[in-house]
Amino acid sequence: MSHVHQTAGHLLQELSSGQLTAVELLQTHLQYIDQVEGQVQAFLQVDREGALRDAVEVDRKRAAGEPLGRLAGLPVAVKDNLCVRGWKTTCASRMLENFAPPYDAHVVQQLRQADAILLGRTNLDEFAMGSSCENSAFQKTRNPWGENTTPGGSSGGSAAAVSAGMAPLALGSDTGGSIRQPAAFCGVVGMKPTYGRVSRYGLVAFASSLDQVGPFARSVQDAALLLEVLSGHDPRDSTSVNASIPEWSRSLDQPLSTLRIGIVPEHFGPGVDPDVAQTVTRAIELYRMLGATVSEISLPHTKYGVAAYYIIAPSEASSNLARYDGVHYGHRAEEFSNMVEMYESSRAEGFGDEVKRRIMIGTYALSSGYYDAYYLKALKVRRLIANDFQQAFQQVDLILTPTSPTPAYPLGGQSADPLKMYLDDMYTVSANLAGLPAISIPCGFSNQGLPIGLQLLGPAFEEERILKAAHIYEQATDWHTRRPAPAAL
Amino acid sequence: MPYPKSCLTRKHVHLMILSPHDVQKVATLSRLKLTPEEQIRFADQLGHILKYVHQLDEIDTKNVEPMAHAGELLNVFREDVPVPSLDRKDALANAPKSNGQYFLVPQILEGA
Image 1: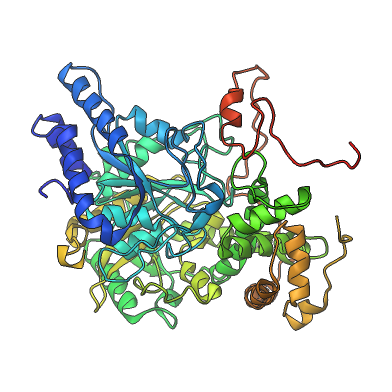
Image 2 (image 1 turned 180 degrees about the vertical axis):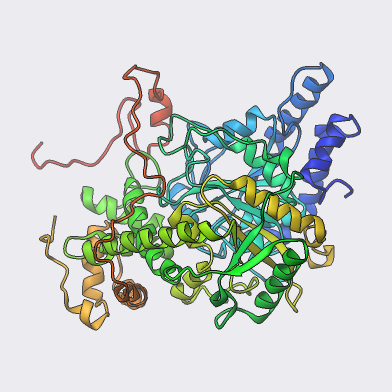
């Protein structure tokens, strides 16, 4: 028990000082998974043998005095839309139930090079489409903080695994909030980097102009460390940017020259849960006390973010998911009379309802006669949203918002109305549309005892500023040290 | 293509409601087989979503340049040097049907 729920930084110290071996740390986590996973169901697979093999190897290297990577011996959970050679990569879809990827995602290679222990693959909304993990074809993940409560999504399995103590670090992907919203719901740190910071090679594509891989962790320090490992140019993703990677995890304690925080008054008005509004307002007050200047700004077009997003993301998805045709990989129907029927039946059987809805919305928005009215219109609004941020960042260093308008809600609470669930993304989608980095950190609890997160957004490639500002808040509070009571598990 | 390019009727842009028939047309373009029950259910759900996104019409976007991509990179080129690609065995390993050399699909051309 003593080593679960610890920060990665603390565990790395114990590992490198010889107080703890990678095998011991792994065994502790596997035993803990045995205790709580039945209730949480964060994992689609735990790779006990592979993880043990890797942990033995790390211990051997350490004993032999060989050089070790920056995450040597740390178990890391991986969202099941990232290719890991030797595992299946299912995207929580019947379509890919048996898909065994022939290569590692770039970020998985980075983890292996850092000598991390790949612990297992975590649950998600099918093809990362959803905000509660309930769109998984395989299982419902539960929020460790509340009985029958959603962990958020789409990276809900990764967020729940870190929150419940089953993994100190995890990978997620964020297309419209899929790292930040579950991080807020589960009381952990989650970050979406600048578009292009991290290679998407081996991330199963949902909406290619929006998707980014990022870290889940128990502290800003840990998130910074994992992001350093994940970042970097990769020629196999031509949108990955060839920019230097600052040593974020080592610069967190250096002061910021200025900390001018912008807030948008509408983010705290009607439509926002009162507990969320109050809690985030208290966090703003704390920032003020810590020396930040806080000013009201206007982002006039971000209220259209969800509408623009739910044209652009499905349009890209309809194109990306056209590859699932029952020919090269994925599910093929048993019964069909011709080629077209093979496509139609394979896709009808392989995809769940939300995936079908998005494919159809995207197909509709891109179809002749509707392209200008929907897709092109949304791309123009996307420009206006990006311009809003550019103007705002001339006045302020960072923008602070609630991560989500509500705390986690009960399982089944919103699945009946797809549109209602889309509105959960109101604070997170704009960062993806504009390509900006953003973090969610724990900032308190609702009256029901559910975690609440605040989001900090910064200009492109200013992860350092975001991480430092998040670290300042974290140093002054203890929300990030709270752990769900074992009774809740 | 079973439907001509102008297949999707414009009436629902005004009514902002998709008919099950419209949904079936989109499903055909999307290569998705739907049951009649699904056509009705999706017509309702997709109609709501389309109605919601129509709020974008409030915004004047005249003279606004569309933004397809956050990175807005120019073309990225690499040297045209051959590198090893996926091994055939690996490439075929996930195929629903293959003969070890090719992906196998149903007959496409009549009389072939």
